[in-house]
Amino acid sequence: MKKRLIIILLTIIIVGMGLPGAAPGSSPDDIRFEPRRTDQNVRLELRGTGLLRYMAFVKVYAGALYLPADVPSEQALSDVPKRLEVEYLRAFKGPDVGRATWAAIRKNVGDRLFEQLRPQIELHNSLYVDVAPGDRYALTYVPGKGTSLELNGRTLGTIEGAHFAAALFAIWLGPAPINTAFKAELLGES
Image 1 (cartoon, rainbow, N blue to C red):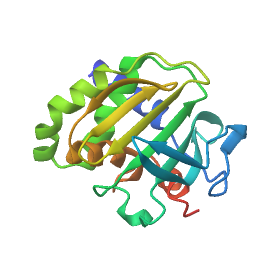
Image 2: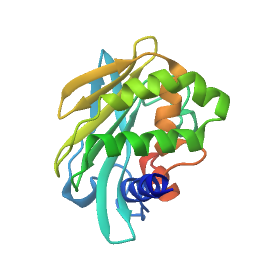
Image 3: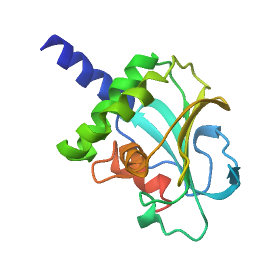
Image 4: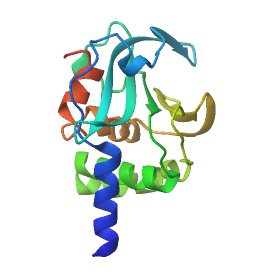
């Protein structure tokens, strides 16, 4: 029971409550995101940015979503290239980020798919390391190649599979996102 309570509290702290903040395409809280990215020969355009907060006043991280210019926002979880950058405003332990990722994926996919993806999720979560304010994780999915996890521009690993990518990006963009306002900001809809 105590372990479950700790995991729930960590998840709340990490994924928190976002509030509408930055306008689409701008950079929240003076954090700069590039207007376009070319990753693995795929050109991606900044779709939106947001600032995730906990309890309305604790800034957790700023995020930016990149998609191909011709991909509608409602297709962000389909088998299309995408990139999510998250710059932390607070320090977190790598295992805590992994536990929050685990819980958020579970909320967005059914039990059967979750069990099928378990090995990929475990491998992905093992890549997380401690982060300090100013550190930036990036997730980049390229169809046929997989989802790469980077920390401050250094690739930590790549996990194959379109279903894994959709489940991972669903943390922010899925039917049960960490915060609906933050999702709308990333998709450029707020």
